[in-house]
Image (cartoon, rainbow, N blue to C red; front, side, top):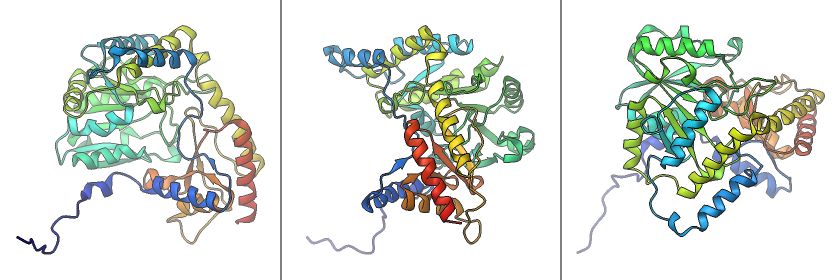
Length: 408
């Protein structure tokens, strides 16, 4: 029997995929290929991937665990006892926050794993969530996956990019299931003190809203600033969870390891979902993560990654200023959030960030991410990642300066 196809009824692609986030990252990758094809040496300050390897102690722990014959069974989806206990010890050491490793921690394949799945675990389709704008793309992308409505909370320069909690209407607080924030954040290294966190917890408890705090950059504070945990606030365990990542803090981006900790009900919901989705993080990687936390607790913060990125920040911002582009010194993270130079413009504001990043890359080989990739409030800005050594950053600044002098 020959089957005759009528007009197709399937596109074989979910509509949700169009709402997962900006396509600009794929576009920038294509621009980089085009720049290389034209003979340019690319200096990639786009993706925030650390350019250093983990410490030797971490690599040795991983290699020894990989060689053991008993390392290849399915891991526990919630994370090994050793990993969760060490994560709890580190939370106590780093933030003086008490969490139960049995009920209040779940291991993740990087914090993005948890961020992508948490809305599915704690929300129903049609629910409302508050997310920052600009914000890391998975914040809103995860809501599209879960069918959850997003209420963008503007991060405005006149407020030092800190979310104005008092601007959120009561009706929004009343309806929202969760509010997602990040201090220090990506793409903007917004920093807050404990008093801000206390007010956030107060509001969340009042309105029965879950706080999701993305603390992926906890070990990247500069000029004496050390990022704070939402779980330092009394009562936070009743209303908050927090994500931690080994990618930036310990140069373990490719290992895909992190954890979420906090409210037992929300942690349990994510554990339950993930137990049906995956079998957890490879045990040797969890052992390497345990070694990373042990090493951090032994050596102290002065041996961490912050000093490296603080030096790079100082060198690069000074070099940019010398080239005619003054950008603020971020207080934390590996990113600079820079308003586009006044000398650069296109017809109208729409698309200005993307045009800047595109032209800069094709003419100089320096890759940055247009601010519009992170939300509507990001138009007119660029995100620059400090993921090259100081010599390369100086060369990038020189090329940017030449670009600005010849493209006005």
